[in-house]
Length: 614
Image 1 (cartoon, rainbow, N blue to C red):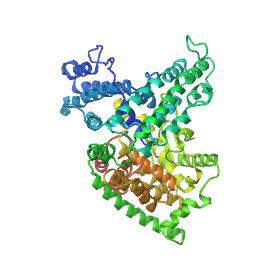
Image 2: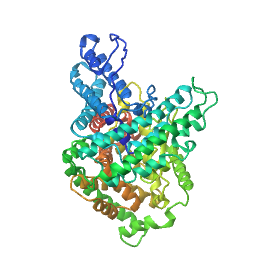
Image 3: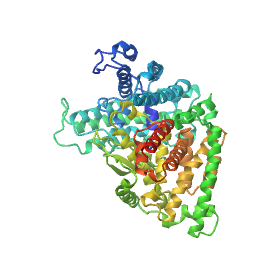
Image 4: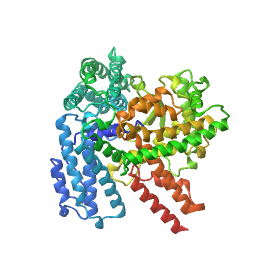
């Protein structure tokens, strides 16, 4: 997935605007003017028939508030009603958001678990973990200043959000026009926030923003018709009109020419002349004020565990050594003469491993996905209804983008999920990595996982908005290990590719902590990665820059994968011949995105139930 920072940015920066009201059956109906009034009403137990109804109202208030607070997140999740406006990135907006988040965090203590069902207790525990860790991070550390980078900055998602908005109605098209008109204000708010960060000395490392101006320039079109923001209007259905507008397409072109492009030109000028000259030359988060504590908090946030930086580093070294032994064996089985470094160089450089055109690469990815789809029922009892497709990474972000990522779709909006493959620099896109990458990003990885979560029924709506990175990315990495059970990795080079990707995630544990806790330089991290991996230098450089830009996020993959594998082994040992892999996977994915400790409880309860049946 792209690697979850879209949620982090949206959830951390969005303004929790005053909640405008809600009605709930069996609850006294009234109009709520603010978050404070809403929570005062919920705190009064006499307003509800029982504790379960009160908790339900609390969850509903939080979910509706989150949607109202972050229109961009609402669009991303397919939640209608706020598609005409953007999030508030202003300093005042962030202050109000944090104040309201504090209220929700404190309110979680109101509920008596002895009066709740088992499911309600689980939901409350998930809420407490999600909101508690979010408030802990945002209240202590200046996350609002780290919203711009060339890997996953907020600017990259603006065209994507516009392009994923519905265009099959007059309302949908009107919303897009409204958002285009709001882009200048959004960019100005971002500029003001980043300027404040410069004044306080809290800025991004220079290497993580050096390409941002060029990315912005690629978003700026020579003509309005060529703009990425015009794409939704290029093929509008006949009969769609907006009252008061003579020509929708003409209005869109005017807004792009007179408002959107000038706003991006201004923001680009700011990045080139003000931000870049003030970007820092250091790399680790520990180089910023209170950076060591900030990094430790991010480890907790992304892994949903209490593991320390030192423990992560040690685990990473151990995993690198283990996987390296498997690589050595496979190299010998292939019959390559030379050491592992020579073999990795061979994999990086030999022409047989690369396509000549972007079209060939995309066709090959689509073929792999089509071969995976029909065998999924072997390992899963429940599959999602939402389809997915394979797309090319947009040109404006491909140079700094990772090899691939996934964007969720929405049944409600009629938008499929998409696995995006990077076709920039084909000599960095080897064939041997494609099966593992498809399995991770599409199925049974992120598409299957996230689509199933979005289709859950009878769970509080807030659950669909959560981003426990260790679960999401842990599942993606665990999915790669399912290749043999799906009939893949029969080619030894593809199997080596899977090991390369597993090694990649193990290396992350070492270099991420090395950079942010142990003071490693960028070059030291690149050298360690190169020494232990077959990935291209271009890919390695992009990855290291990503770890510098997103401290702690990359740790979640291995931590989550190891936990899922641990739980599977536990279930196989306890149930022996009664172990059902399809049922196990349904349990793992059956509750949506959850913390790792909740996942462990769910699997343990399932094991107990299966043992009782025997």
